Image (cartoon, rainbow, N blue to C red; front, top):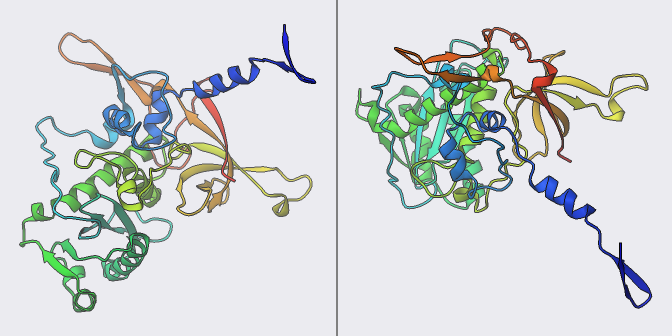
Length: 368
């Protein structure tokens, strides 16, 4: 080992820092985990996202002949099904045209008693906002919330809104609100839902992604609102087939940050602050990841003991990389067969048999 003298100082070249840096920079995650974190999006969309957002996790293995069980359970359709997505932008700028639709009633009530959701999609950016309701009559209240949030964030005004002829959109109070704000209402012709195709297709995408995520970790269906909310968060931060940038970047003028992505429903342990525990109390509580909280450096998690939803900053997550979540295609004589570990139905929060510890991977994150 040699050191070069510079005045009264000897400069010694080491490789430790460089090696550590290289090891950190080259860290890659299994595609199964990244795929689940991103709401089960196709690999092609993941490739597009690499240059569209910061902190996108790199993968260690490119998908080949694997079929995701969560995608099959959440998205499978007949081969002759035509998606016919709305693939043209009909506006000149953000908030020029808003598409809206109500989905529900859902068969399962959320813990908060909601059975409906209303979505507002910006035509120009494809940015989506979703609000949950106990009844359709709450659409006007949710629209006012959406209008305030988006106009404050962008400095622009809503010019038009497009919806179907549902009573929640054609009632006197809704009409008065639009008239006072100078917003033009475009309504579809009765029995022609395709005229509001963008909103209906977006709602279907939300439900498909939510269904995949609920099944993947065996989460009870009553948490569908958290899954749908997380789906909207992801959709706003990934690319689509219509626009070049992500919806988030178009609206907020900055790239989305994805370095803290997690698998929806993943088992974890949240830190309990010193102020909220005594000397011999445990320092963490067992929980499930339920999503992200805008404007807060923390995660939405479900305390599996109390059933309460909390916002937690310091977490340890255990994300499944089991082959039980990915089926391997096997060549058959007459038809394709798929081999997979058995899956239990999502009847309760911890209904699925957990994979052995050897099939798990621990990740530690501190949001503070």
